[in-house]
Length: 357
Length: 275
Image (cartoon, rainbow over all chains, first blue to last red; front, side, top):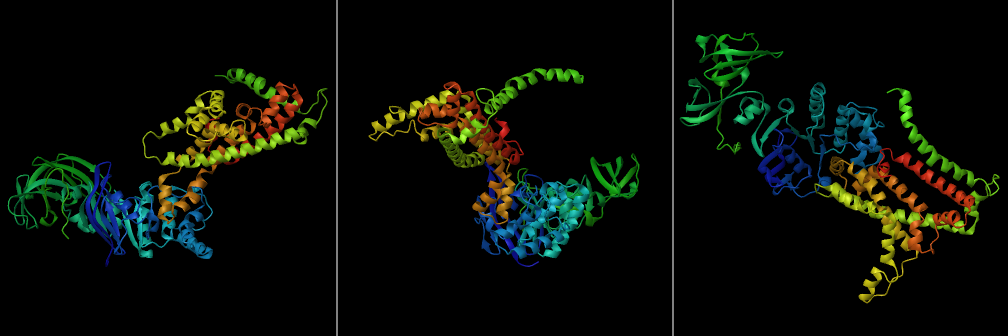
C-alpha cells in the first residue's frame, strides 16, 4: 500500500441536467482492492466509467500514475474493464475473445497462445478455447470476461458489478476467486457493487457513495464498526439509528435515557445520530437495563434470532442467539464501546459529510 | 378442434397455393422444356446463352443488378450506422420516413423519375435556367440504375439497420476497452455482426433488380433491354411462350440460388421481415 496510482480531482458529472457526481475527490493506491459501494444512482458506476474512459467529466481531472488521462480515449488507457453484462463478442470463439486485446497490441502468435492457456487456467476453464460464447453459463462467461481483461496485463482492473447476475452460491465462490486472482496478479482492482456483503468480504478499502457524494472511505472494519453517518450505518447492514443528544464528552442521551459512550469532541447538548448494531444490543434482566421493553416479534434466521423489542417508544432491532419468546419483558443494555455517535447531516438535502483526510 | 377440422380449414390456402403458385410454376417448367409441338427440348434453355440478344440482355441485367446492389450497399451501410447512432427517442420514426416511398405505387414513382429526368424535365429546366448544359440521362442504363436504386434502397437499408440495432453498446465499449480504435471496431466488431443483414440486403436488392422490366421500360425508353424485357416481349408481343418460359426458368434458377445463399447466412430472418 504505497503511492497513489489514480487520483480523481474535483470531478463533476451531470446527465440531462441532473448532477451525478459533485466535486468528487478520491485516490486509489497501488495494489489496492477498492470497492465503490452504494445504492443505484449513487454515482459509483459513473465514477468507474470515467476511469475506464467511457465518459468525460464536466469538470475536474483524473490522474493515472501522475499523468493526466481525463481526455485520453478508452483504447489508450492502461486498464481493462470487466463489464456487468460480460460483453463477450458473440461472433468469436472463447480463444478469439481472449486474444482480442493481444492481437491489437500485435503480440506474436506463440505469445498469444501461451497467454490464452495461462488465462483459462487462472479462471479454471482449461480447454474452453474453441467453445462458443452461447454454450457457456453466466458464471463461465464472467470468468472469460475476466480472462479477456487480465491477459492484457493492465495495471488496474475495473469490475462493474461483475457478480450481479449470478446466483448466491456462485457469487460467493466468485468472491473468493476474485480475491485469489487479485493475490496472484498483484494489480489494483476497482470494484463497483451495491452488495455490502460483497464489499466487506473482498475489499481493502470501501468507498461508500450516495447521491453523487462520498459518504465514507475506510477499511471494511472501519465502515462497519464506525459508520460516519446514518446513511452509511443504514446501508452497511441493518442498524438501530436513533436521534440523540450528546450531553457531554462520553455521555449521550437517547429516548430519554443517559448512556455512557466513548466518543468525544462533539460539544455540549449537540443533536446527533446514534447507531447501535442489532448484534450489540444486549437483552438483560429488566432491572439491569438502561430501559425496559417487550419483545414484539421473533424470527429465526439460522445463525441467530431477529427480534423486535418495543422500548421507550422505539422499536429496537436485536440479533441474539438466545430464544426469547414474544411478550417477554426484557431490559436493554449496550456496552459504551458499541455506541456509535454520528454528526447529523447539515440539511435534509445534503446527506453527505465532508471527508477530512 | 379435431385434426380433420384443422385440415379442412387449411383447404382454401392449399387450393390457393396449388392453383396460383405451384401450378403456374410447373407450367413455366413445362413450356421451358418443350417446343411448339409439345416435344421435349433443351433449345429454349440453351437459347438464353446462345442467342445474341438474350446473352446481351442477360449480361446487361447482371451488370446493372450488380451496380445497383453495390450502390445500394454503399449508400445504406453508412446511413444505417448514422440512424443507429442517432441519440433521439423516436428512431423508428426516422426509419419509417425512409420506408415511406415504398407505400407509394411503384409505377408512379418510376413515372415521376421519368418526368424529372426527361429532356425537358424538371432537372434540365433548372440546369438550363442556371446556364448549364442539359444532361441527357433518360433512356440510358444510368437512368435505369437510378430508378432501381431509388426503388430498392429500403430493401438494403432495413436488414442492415436491423442487424445493426442488435449490436449491443457494451460490445463496442468492451472492444474500446481492449485497445481497439474506430477502424478496428468497424472491421472486427460491426461488420462481422452485420454480415447477415448485408447478405439479406444484397439478395433483396439483387433479385428484383435482376428480374425487373418496368423500370428499364420506362426509364430506358426501349433502349435498355434487360432480360426481364426480353421475357416480357416473348410473352406479350411474340407470343413465344416456350422461349419466354425458357428464359424465366434460367432466371428462376438464379433467384433460387440467391435465396439459398440467404438461408445460409441469414439465420435471424432480417430479410423476411419486409418480403
